[in-house]
Length: 313
Image (cartoon, rainbow, N blue to C red; front, side, top):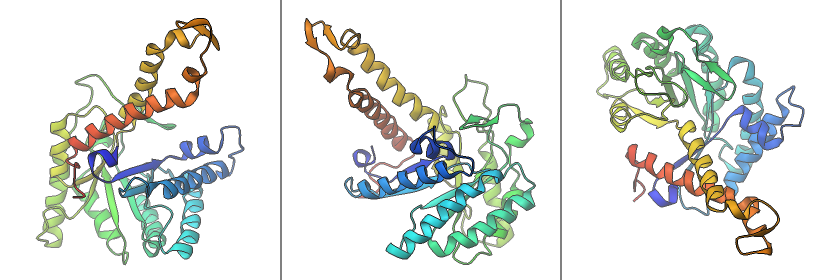
């Protein structure tokens, strides 16, 4: 997809995704499967990314306080990779400590950024709560007031994390965004919060930069192009679209099954004759490739929405 639209792409691993790569039957009591699977996935990306000729950002998604040992294992792997190659295994990690107090949230993030900075790893942190449910994190019943971050909170985080020498950070501020896709009218996005936060920080630090904070748009699936581009204008540099890409992948598999349905009812026998083998149709690579092509098309559309086409030229 990135090679087609001419821009960078971000590959993101979740804790549950890492466990899935390692194998769901593997013991994960100490996050060993999540750590091993995520590292294996990252190494795979490092090996094949050069073949596509586009920059790839390797990121990990929502990590709650109880899951920090997962990040610890990945940082250890990045440190080893840095010693061997001069670059980290991962580009960035997200710590989602929004369940904690603001002070504890940013305090822990600051501690981790001090570990990340020497390795060239960026930290993404969350303020407020992203609604909906994703990868075992369920915020469907959260108090609606927590879906909207206040400018004072954003400034506090900016001030604290800016104290880390060489540190790089992005802020996943909540402005009504949710994980998943919902019927029109059920999501009240207020990206004006991001503009207000930028103005607040600019005034506090006396900066000429209209966008001192780099924001992240969580729960971008199902959002209108107008909302997406309005958020970009407020300093959003990254948008998550997990739900839409999952659907696109499934939709590709669904369409493949519909097209070749009569060849997929048995190993032998179908429209071409009762004695004809069907192996080339039920080979898992065929339906998975259809899913990949469908998802790639959705990512090209996302790149267009995000004004990320031909940015490498």
